[in-house]
Amino acid sequence: MPLQNRVDPEGNIISTNARGAWLGNRGVIHNDQKQIVRPFKIKAWITCALQFKGRHRAVMTPNRWTELFFLDEATAFAAGHRPCFECRRDYANLFKAAWIKGNPGFGFNLKTPIGKIDDIIHSERIKADRSKVIFKENPQKLPDGTFILFENNRYLINQHKMYLWTPFGYEAGKDLPANDKVEVLTPASIVNAFAAGYIPQMGLKV
Image 1: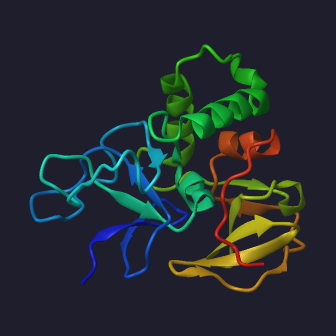
Image 2: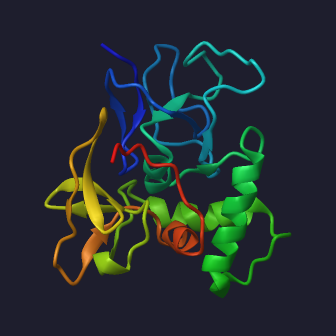
């Protein structure tokens, strides 16, 4: 049985044989038996590069942060993660700038500590009962890289098409639904950052 360390677009931590393209961190959320015991420990949910300065880790080492994995960066963002400032500094700075541009109502600027943005994202990704925060929007207005929930399935929006997510990749694209509103999985302020210019990596083969 593979470890429970893969994250889906709703932020659930699942068990699958599929490989991931990115590494994630929510703090120490496993026990000594390599079992997930909590959804998160810290508010700074980050997305890291799989390789950085030749570092090597034994997955789920006791009392060390829990290694999580994502199909692509768009999946990580949908779950509520953002780029790491250590191993992905350039992308983290690009994301921060786009987030601030796309969310002017908060009054943040480039000198605002990233922790304040983490607080906003945290309020947009998970409720007090640990369920996923979802909002509704017209699918035609959503930027590429956004995930929606449609007919109980998770779809990635790209180039006016939607692609069904699976742990192993995406299925063929379909036209966006004609609905006036659909349920959006990607946190609202991150959607605004995409609209402001941040382009997440998407594991599409189109």
